[in-house]
Image (tube, rainbow, N blue to C red; front, side):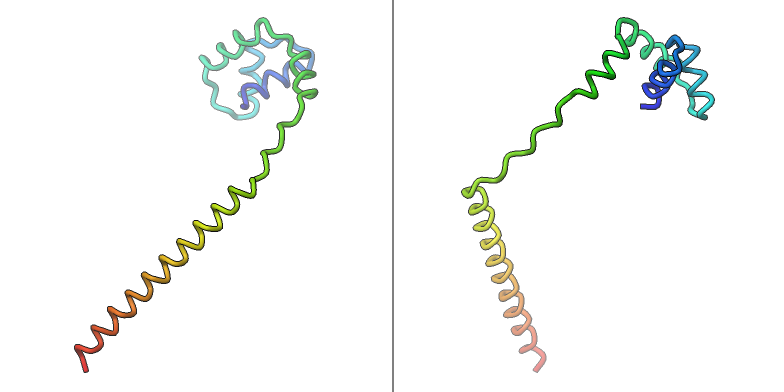
Length: 107
């Protein structure tokens, strides 16, 4: 992300987005510069109107809220939870019976 931020910073300063300008910004920020990433970014931005991209990004609609659970899904989840609780109870009872049996050995 810092590479994109550097390009946006250079653009907002009214400078041309070049490999050198992006590298200068990244270097000033103390970021280790990967020349291949800088070249790829400049090549990707070559035919992009950055100002238009920023405006269209600001105008983007927020994502739709996820659909609410249906009553059927909620009922299924409740049934599963009840079944799990019953299974745990059965396991606890089996463990208690086993412990009682072991206790009888030491009486």
